[in-house]
Length: 265
Image 1 (cartoon, rainbow, N blue to C red):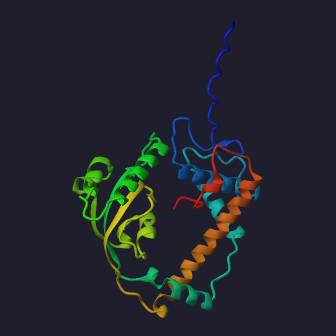
Image 2: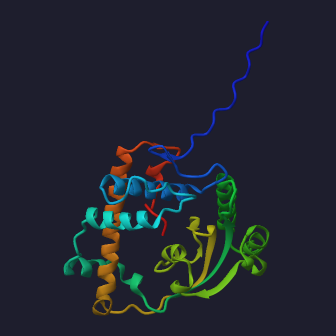
Image 3: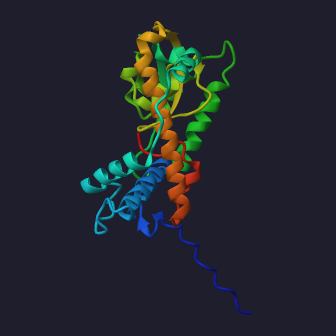
């Protein structure tokens, strides 16, 4: 009786956009980084098709595009993303519903456990460890011994782990923008119910205390309100444009539908 020869495991699909590789063979990228590269490549190829970039422009190397490609993408977006200016009524309504977002002098006292994304790290395994830590720390009952310092000391890739994960009192300008967006202008105190993603990795964050600062009147922040709404409109238009480009392209090995933000911040 002859035994069947086992088939080798199927090779993972290399991430590509229209045949252009998004990563080198020795690179392991976080899903968000891979999606960002895919979106940039979609825009680079769209700039070529629009005649804004030479067809001999070199493909990106480890995510780095040419200076000419960067300029061409900027010109492409200026032409394609037509977003209306926010009118005064819309600005006033947005401020009335989100006045806390424009508070001045807000501070938070934080501690965190950082699961750093480093070259070659298994992203799925890292996320599972971070989620397990989050669940464990949020499950602490009243009166139970504080487990956060031990978790930070054992698991955190930040030097603050030696101090129980404490970061002290911080303002928004003292945090990475990705952290600031999740933490400031919110009412929550305690371990946040979700992992916070940043350029450094995945964070389990606990807000120990908040100082709300002061909320200026609308007239004092009118320009900031308008800029916020225009940024949101531009981001929405860019997301829709990228979805259109992705629908026309051959995209392999990367899930663009799961992208929460179209480009690296």
